[in-house]
Structure formats: C-alpha cells, structure tokens
Length: 151
Image (cartoon, rainbow, N blue to C red; front, side):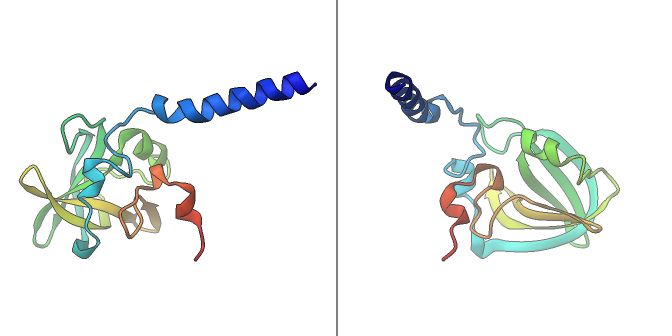
C-alpha cells in the first residue's frame, strides 16, 4: 500500500512541475504583453450599435484568435477587443452579439498598433452581461487562486 501511495505522490508531483511547462501561451494570459497594456486609469464606458464582428482578431503578433467588435457610438466607431476565441465561444450561447445589437461596453482605452482600442472588462446587451476582466485588468479566463482571496 505504501508503494502505491509513494507512486501516486510522485506522479502528482511530476504533473505539478510539468504542467506550467506544458501550458501554451496564447498571448491572452495575465502576464502577456497584451494584458500589460491594460490601464485602470483609462477605463471608459461606451454605448452603441455593433457594426462588425471579428472572430479572427489578433491584437498583437503571435496571439491566438480572439473576438473583437466594432461599435458605432454617437462619437464614432470604437474597436472593442473582448478576449480569446475559445473563451468568447463558450459565452456565445448566453451573450450572442451580432451586427445591429445595441450594447454597452466598459473597458480600458489603450493604443495598440498605433490605433485606439478598448480592452473589454464587461459587456452588456439588454439584461445579459459578460465579464471579461477585473478592474485591474486580470482576465477571468486566467485567474489564479489569490484572485479569490478576501482581504
């Protein structure tokens, strides 16, 4: 019995050490160059109509596909980058956004590739809501245990 316990413990230890090495950086993670561009001081809320959907958005070179939307507001068009495609596809059943929809988006307005974009924190369509990032810009798809600690 002791040999089985030692073998299981060794396998779990090896998995714990190897897992970070096996994880693939898709460019959307909490420590990515993209996420580092988030600035809590530039958070804005916009309202408008979705005019375009892009499910192949790659904000920076080398990033995996993501979901972005162009929103027509009273002041002009705004490009909103929501998150990685795999994450937003999960929410598509609950928060399906398409051209013509009226939405409200809160996020950090930053410059990427010389163009202004909004890194979405939260999107609303009617009573439906999708949260993407914390107020500090941490993506919900890449939370760590300390993100749940209560001060």
